[in-house]
Length: 188
Image 1 (cartoon, rainbow, N blue to C red):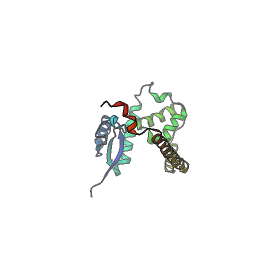
Image 2: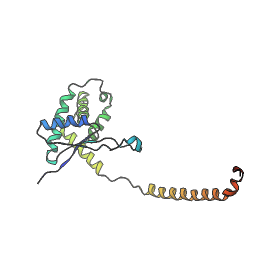
Image 3: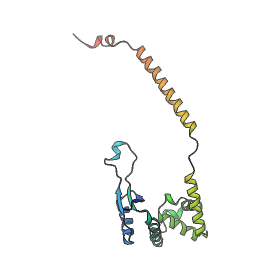
Image 4: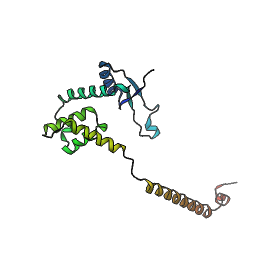
């Protein structure tokens, strides 16, 4: 049976996806790149869709691929310039990166750990795993009750439709009929 490939990471540019693909291929992980770019320029459609290039791998390779990317980012953070934007973050903001690692890249995640350690904060495996568990709990929570917004939407739709009918009726009854309006415009 052929194994299915699942989305591992999404990127805005093909170059970023190719870098990850090359890294994973060097480590014997098969990849497929999927391009979800819209077929037309989205500026004409008024859409906010972005190009999303996906790197897909087999589900069984996810753990291995994540550890490869983490190791690569740890190597890269040794050569990062001191003017990189994360160095201006507060400790709370850096902990937020560790909490919401799914919203940040592996490089920023590793660098946030390094900066916190350099600032004298302790970061250990237990803390990181508890932050991941807390994030999973937060993501599993259902959204808040939306009933009030739904009711307000129906009320405004009804009022808007009702007021539209009133305005339309008043415009229809206040105008002269078309034969009276056009008498002076035609020369016979």
